[in-house]
Amino acid sequence: MRQPRLKAPPHVDGAFYHCLSRVVDKQFLFGPNEKDRFLALLHECARFSRVRVLSFAILDNHFHILVQVPQRPDPSQLPGPDEIVADLHRLSGHQDPEGVRQRFEMFREHKDDAGYAAYLASFHARMYDVSAFMKLLKQRVTQSFNRRHGRTGTLWEDRFKSVLVEGAGMALATMAAYIDLNPVRAGIVKDPKDYRWSGYGEAMANRKRAKLGLQFVVTALQHGREE
Image (cartoon, rainbow, N blue to C red; front, side, top):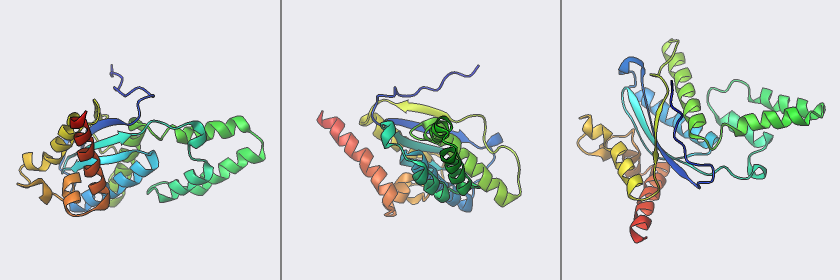
């Protein structure tokens, strides 16, 4: 029997998770092009899911991600239909965002408030949640990889693993360092800055999103030492 996934209580403002998943049968399927595509999809899915990627390491047969999941805002502050449709247009692999728009319009035309609310809630449930984010990411990566390689079937071993990082500070910095040092431990590079498919490597290459993630971790560590 699967154990329930450990998540932060809903009232916690900004929970941190280290997420890991492996390719089925531990096959080494991710070459440079696949890693580039994975990275693009990672940021697309994070934006849609409203999570912040702090660091990551994409290896040949598995990946690590460190994310912050903000507290779910008040329902009045969650995105409406127009914003959701715009997000879907930016999300690779979604087949029919305009069909989503038309369904919202249908609920309005029929004055089906209950149906409208339930449909809207089905999209909100995919936001501010680590499980929904990882499900979306793994689905999108599978679809992209299978399409590019004429492949079918699952790409991943079982469900993803996750660790709830207790608080921002030393624990968060230690986890980020563990993730960024994965390519070094694997013998791929001697210096983590030389691995381009990692948060630290991208930050050292002056990539804005990666620099912001690293800055967040360093700032959290400094604040933790001051307390």
